[in-house]
Image 1 (spheres, rainbow, N blue to C red):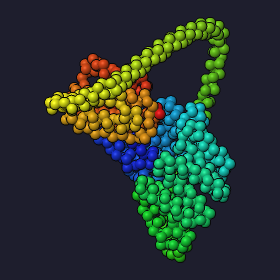
Image 2: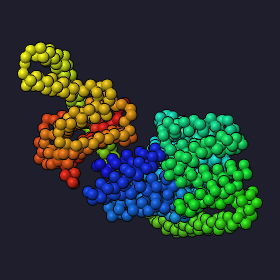
Image 3: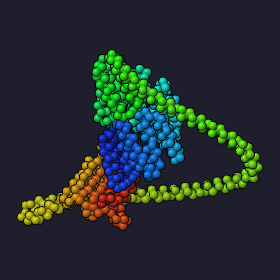
Image 4: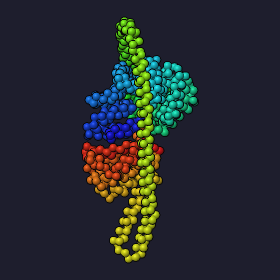
Length: 638
């Protein structure tokens, strides 16, 4: 389970554009999966490595990792995992210009998802097939597949619908239909605002901005583009920020405001280099070369294009390489270096011929497939027609005999179904009411416990604590022994500690993370247990019940480590993963036996009840290297 959470957190960092951190989580997950020989975790770790490499622009590494994930998943006969890995390999091939290979793989993926009857995955595959046709330049076929995808996602209310609307907007823009492009960009924005999805909101603004730039409404375009940029900046989403900066730079370049264009382009270049986003880097270098060429800075333009060419050759991206070669020809022609321009023209022709041959081969294969399908369907229809005539005569004779019997059976069946459904509804309603009442009862018990804890804590602090303080003052004036004074001091410290544990003031004032740090310091400072605590993504506070439940879990499990585990090391991790909070507590002690878990004491039963009451999950399992791993997952409630 810990492997799963590590990869989930890695995906979060990758989607935020923090590729180095995502790689570290992938490495941690892979190491743990190898230690415990957990093959599904190996596949998931390789998958994260591959997707992260693709986002960085290192497509060769991306394919290598996705093929490793595919090999692992094939040994497990994990059909869904196999389809997912093949889909990832196809997407990378799309990216580097191997469209025929991508379409071949995607056709296999499509058949796998059809067999699984997974409409969400089918829609996603149609989206990817559309993208392949888009890059082939077959925009009509791309829009046909993308509209099929949109229809399926609208029926399923699929979260990917915003992305599909965004893609449709881009395709219509390529088809020259700016009105339709604007309509789907607005659809993406409206849906994203309704769903409160920042990523979709930013995409919508960016698409609207690009449409207005195509219309040469530059002021309006900049307004939309900067809105999209602001959202991506607030998300700290590097990939989106690079895209925003680049589009704003293009807009200023079209307006011939080169200083502003350079400013935003440099922002994009710095971020692309920092995050290892080679794709964004290539686009930015080509644009920088264009700006330098227009300023007659030919050497600087040539230097940018050499960097871009090197990146294209290492990634194998044919599309990007063609745009680099085209710009290089323009630069060297403007410079007057015609031999160099001719050299790049030869490279462009050779690469264009290669891409054209691949595209032609793909289209011929599609035509042959369509011809074969139509021929088979024609023969099948002829056979079916002859069979239908004979079958029709037989059915007419049987119809009257079976019709009355079928009618009677239907009436009986309907009556039976109605009775069964009524009884089922009654049972379900009764079960739901019992569960609801049990939950209310449990919640009342927990709230009563917490109120009693608060009352006792206040009594200890306000009454007993003050009486002990007065006693200490009186003793200090008398000739009491040092031993008596030390005993009194220890008693005061113990009372204060108990009071704080029963009513954690730090939790109430500062939140869960500082409260856990204080708990660890106070509980383990005089023990032989070394501890490590780390947290991620918890800048926003959770609801009071959620924080208190997680704090009580930490209290109980730390107490168990001290009392029973015979451990000398404790690791505690607290993460936010999407709309959930994950708490992992791991020690190197004696672990837990199956009988011990079955005969759990009141403390363990209490925390299980607390977690279940807020809609969470608790699992406890022995680690392979010894010790216990407790994992808690609860919904994030602000």
